[in-house]
Length: 331
Image 1 (cartoon, rainbow, N blue to C red):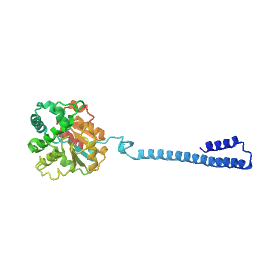
Image 2: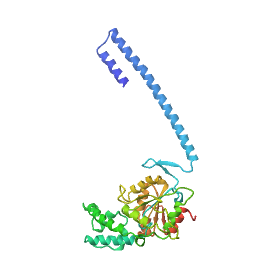
Image 3: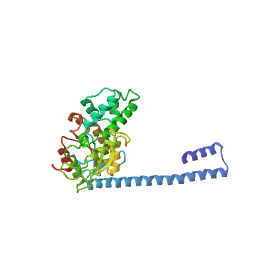
Image 4: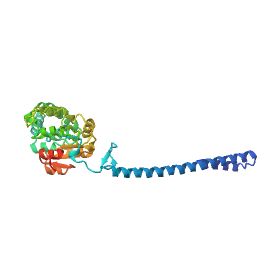
């Protein structure tokens, strides 16, 4: 800029054919100012380049030292600015465990199926069979019921309006039907939760996330608290869940990661230090999007073939398999 301006001024004076002493002085002053600032500018540029070079070498050196010092390398950041470990965490090393409820903790599919039939019959919608019910458990309640009503989310403008109306009625009925008989824990689940809370090597924080309403989640967890399968009072099982959410208390339901991320935030554990456990392909997709380790279980509504197509890191056939994986009972 200085060169451009001084050159233009100089040319202007030449065009005016300045021959007086005053004009000569102006020319000398302009050239001197430009020369001085030009030298200073070049010095600053050179100094800046040297600083950048030195800082780059120091950063490179520290990065190499840090990689060799740390047992876990961090080569990239996720969308929240948190380091993503290049060496995968093992489930038994996790600081947070987040459970799905239906088909994972509670054997409640018959409760959901029966309540669905009641709502469909109330609105004169054709009843469904058990296979279709299981297939659609991957969706949130409003979306699932709207699909059962024959609506298409891409083509029917009232898809979500109808789905929400059906879901509101369903939730009122569904929550009231919860009992040990209709939504009891699978064998061994209660003891697994107790054992996780007793891990001494680290503090394991537990949470629950369902695509049903949050009132249902609380009802199922509270209902399953009075006794354990081994006859010991399960004081604190419900209290062990530091975060409990349903599709109606998170920004977006599964397969979106919003609910998992919210649970992670509330229990104070990074998603990369958490395990999410569920029985549906949407659970695996949500966990993958959140950056969690994901475990699929086969005692719920979905088959091995269905879970294999989802991005699960592990698939467990039995509760004992899950216990071994989370507690490292067997190698």
